[in-house]
Amino acid sequence: MYSLLFEDKTAIVTGAGIGIGFEIARQLAAEGADIILNDIDPEAAHAAAEQIRQEGGRCEAVAGDSSDLACIQQMVQQAVASFGKLNMVVANAGITTFGDFLEYDITQFQQLVSVNLQGSFFLAQQAARQMIRQQLPGRILLMSSVTGHQAHPNLAAYGMTKAALEMLAKALGVELAPYGITVNAVAPGATLTERTLSDTGYQRTWEHLTPTGKVATTQDIAHAALFLLSPQASQITGQALVVDGGWTAVSPPPAS
Image 1: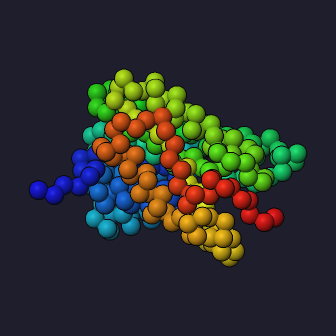
Image 2 (image 1 turned 90 degrees about the vertical axis):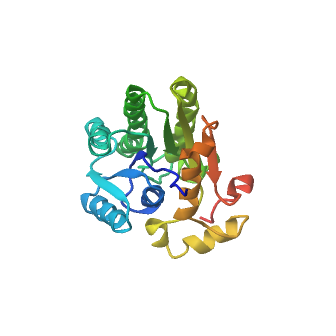
């Protein structure tokens, strides 16, 4: 009998109103998972959840700031209240701020660290506590970036946060292994999203710089995420999977 890969599983996906986060939530729902979908933009969160429901999935929106502990706790509580348990979390919410190192200001830095690191750290913590209470194995997925592997112009602070998330995956992979919880990261390279498509030269530039000659789609990143969340990846933890068409092998920067 055919069965869906994530049937009877519940997932939280943050920053999922659009882009990579939405596609991960959408693909998880298509494979049977119940979804708690978060976005800081209430309109985007509810529209995304409604689209998933129209496609036959089960999805509830929890709008709010994913770096705020109260919002994180609300997501975990809603997962349990609505679907009975929590099996997977994808800490996808993040922001990108460009800036020359010598000019980068503390307000930008604090906002970046709050969303990219604080939000991911405490979502992982609150989710792990719930998984341990349930006495069920679980999956935690962090969203890194190729800029956490290779230096990129004007992204010193951003790249630092993404490298830190990969270290967090390593540390938590060890710390949570006795509970049957795996922790990994996906590190996307250049990807076509609503944001990057607004830059008319983005696709052409990165097709030229990427060895495969193409730019990743949100589907490409979601496929990698679903693998690491799946039962087939039960022996993989503390790792970062780079999805960049080979860019980090050569790492040419875009022309300034």
